[in-house]
Amino acid sequence: MTMPETQPAVLVLTALPLEYAAVRAHVEERRELVHQDGTRVEMGQLPGASWQVAIAELGMGAERAAALTAQLINWLHPEAVFFVGVAGSLKEDVGIGDVVVGTQVYEIHGGKQTPEGFLVRPKALPGSHALEQAARSAVRDMPDVRAHFMPIATGDVVLADAKSEIARFIRRSYNDAGAIEMEGSGALQAAHLNGQVDALVIRGISDRADARKHKADASGSQERATRQAAAVTVAVLHKHRPRKGSSGSSDSEEGPHPREDGEATYDGDHIDFRGSTFHGPVTGKSDGRR
Image 1 (cartoon, helix red, strand yellow):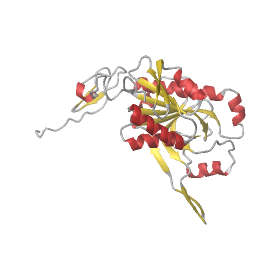
Image 2 (tube, rainbow, N blue to C red):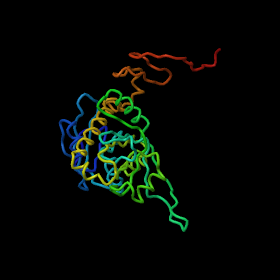
Image 3 (cartoon, one colour):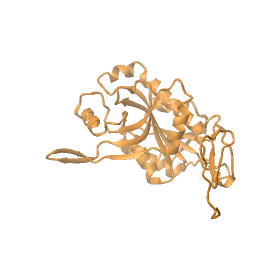
Image 4 (cartoon, rainbow, N blue to C red):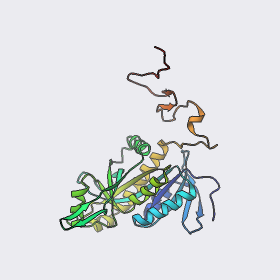
């Protein structure tokens, strides 16, 4: 097995070639690595950021995504995993070209069929709080991106009929979901079971999950959606910081340090507000004296 010369910091996964190309355009000094089972990634540098980025095109489906994500996590040991690509909108106010950041991801097929009907047994995994916060911060400086922070539904279905039974089922059982796609729950499950990996699903909206899907795709909506999702992912990586420095020591071992983006940092017993302004009360830690 060909192993990376240095351990990559973050893994960005896609299902489709155009999704891969949109992410790849941001990564420089790429080199291809091949797992012993044949899975391939390109690893390179994200300009202006601390991250080495490994990108992979996995193909479609949540089960495939789960298996290959687990394989890549065990091989490359990234600190964070993103699944990036296109999705269909489930909400009127989530338009084509918008980006949905998954606050949580639903696996929509879990349940029990009974004589009274199908009883839903919801399976949901949250996206990483740290990555979500970085995304919320990043999109404030992206006037050309309309972003939504809401749940995403994952199902082994390409939804192209808003009046179908599966569409009614999703609206009835997962009515807060803003988008539907096919891989996110698998990738998040793999990261969750690993226990040490932050994960987030970022999807650009390419259609409205209705009968007009083919017309939207033909108009170039998928290319636009992938560019938007990739741009948000890169912006998140410029905000989010690796847990470990190049020497392998954690940030907490390095003592107080200012953030380049001016944000306050917490380091053990104090908060460092250099480069930022704090408004509000401060409660000190008691040492037993009054």
